[in-house]
Structures are given as C-alpha cells and as structure tokens.
Amino acid sequence: MSPALDLGLTVLARAPEPGRVKTRLARTIGDAPAAELHLAMTLDVLGTVTEWLARRASAVPVLAWTGRADAAGPLLAAAQELGVVTERQPEGDLGERIAAAVDRRLDEGRGAALVFGSDAPLLPDSLLDSAASALEQADVGLGPSPDGGFVVLASRRALTGCLGGVGWGGETARSDTERVLREAGLTVAGCEGAEDVDEQADLERLAARLAVGDGRAPRTAAWLVTGPGRVGQR
Image (tube, rainbow, N blue to C red):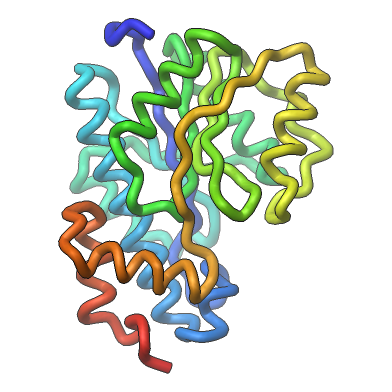
C-alpha cells in the first residue's frame, strides 16, 4: 500500500474503573491493580500508533473510550498529553463499536481505517505495516491473537451492519468475524498478529519479554516493576 495513503487509526478502550476492566486478571492481582495495568497498556498502545502515524506524516490516532466519565479522567488526561484525539464509543456490542470506529474514520475522508484494542501493549511496527499492507489485496485485514480473537482490524470499506453474529470474547471471535465479513461480500486477508494480555499466564509471558529489555511498552514495564499488582505478588 502506498505510504501516502491517509490512514485513520482508532484505539478502543474502557475508562480504567476498578472492577470493570481486566476482570479475569483482577481475580489474581486485584481490581485496582488491574485498572492501573489497563491504563498503562492503553497508553503504550496509543504511544506506538502515534509514533507510527507520525513517521507516515498521517493524522493523529483517535482514542475511542467507553465507561463512566468520572472514571475516565486519567485516561483522557494522558491521551491529551500524547496529542491524541478522543471520542466516545457509541452504544452497542463490540462489533457495532468496531464498525462505528471504521465508519467514522472513513467518513472523515481517510483512505482506510485501522482499529486496535488496548490489550496488546507490545504491538510491533511490523504489525501496523502488515495491517495496512493487507488492504492491497483485500477489503479487510485481521491480525490474530493466540486466544482466537484479533488485535487489529483494518478496513477500506464501511462496516455498519457487517459484524453481527460474532461470539465476542470467545475462541471463535476471529473466525466468526471472517465468516460474517465474507457473508457480507467483503474479501478478508490475514496480517501479522500479537499476544494480548487477558489472563495471569499472559501477564507472566509479557513480564518475561519486558524483563530482557524489549524496549517497548514503557508504562506497562514500569507498572510491572512498581505496581501493587506486579507479577508474582498475590
């Protein structure tokens, strides 16, 4: 794909409210530490995509957030410091919110839209390159995660009404998404994926990678060292 293509990137995240984010991890590290980790990971994802877009001389990314406004303050303040645009996610299930993020970026005149979650803080630049390049051969690109979901969806087509019937949060989320997109008449290509962090085992693998000086995800790395919910503490 031409580097000159104007891409619109959106990161989806929830306000870091204890008890409402990273709930599976919270069973082992606690609600408040899980919320702190969610905030750290979200900001690391935002940092990665912001730097990647800056190298392409493209638009700044958008943080599309949901949750209680009175819990969103730390997230919105940090996003402002990064120069990130913020917007509220609409109501609806995850598929409807992903579709809305894609359609908003296309409606703004972007040539294509990339949508990320906030659970994969070690996004490599090669994944973003791969997601954009997937659109040279297909309408939609999907970057897999090991649990059966996906960490990025790239699209050059509007998706409203195209993502119903997906088992979100389950091991068939990616395959369901590919199926419903094809049923809607869209072509789908795979792209590079990444590991997301939902369970204690995921967190321990992430900690091992950061412990050897990976260099990415500095906020998550700092949380692992100083946070009350650091790996190994119960």
